[in-house]
Length: 266
Image (cartoon, rainbow, N blue to C red; front, side):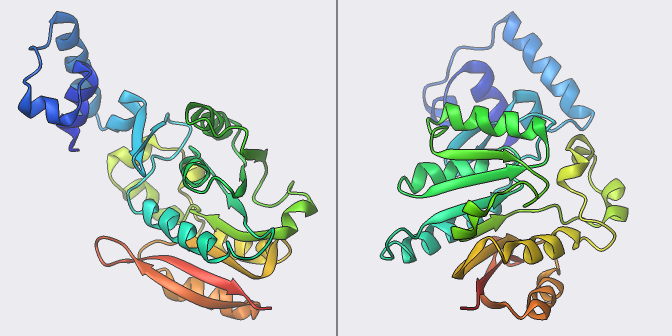
């Protein structure tokens, strides 16, 4: 849905089809004041998702606030890729444990828990505020008993139980530090900790690739979302480790190389 549809379906408590086919009643005074307030905040650049407090992802509704980065449609491709990998491993006994690094709103972990009911999932984040949102979303979708949330700086407080992971997934911060302030005004409302990838945008790829080795099973997969023109540098980091082989590159809806999947060498 576009922003106008999102706003009016939320205020009028109807779905998109009803807006056009059933013609819901005109907004009352209270609803008009709410619409006016939303439009004023939106005109200042505040993302509509934060104003409404929600965002759709993988067909599910997720609660969001300025403590988490807003889920993007491109990240759905990452979830779809993980589902295919998990199904590929389904014939191996006791082999489907997923670890997500930097869960944010929990959209990846919760979606995977909903769509892969037999998979064990652990999700980490350094931000206590983000984990509160992620746990809330897990409860809203009735998968809170299926996801273990850990406050951790990447792998720092993950114990060795997670050395049995079959898949590690992350959509890490990958924007170059010096470029963040020049991006669209909406980006300024999102938590910098979830965006800032360091001087060259690659800080978290270096750390995640290095840290994943002792947490990933031989033959397991590391799946990472990447930014524009980051395929080659991330591939280079993987190849220097000599513990990974690039398994697949996935392009997004704009034909941008968006996901890199590597397999740990046996």
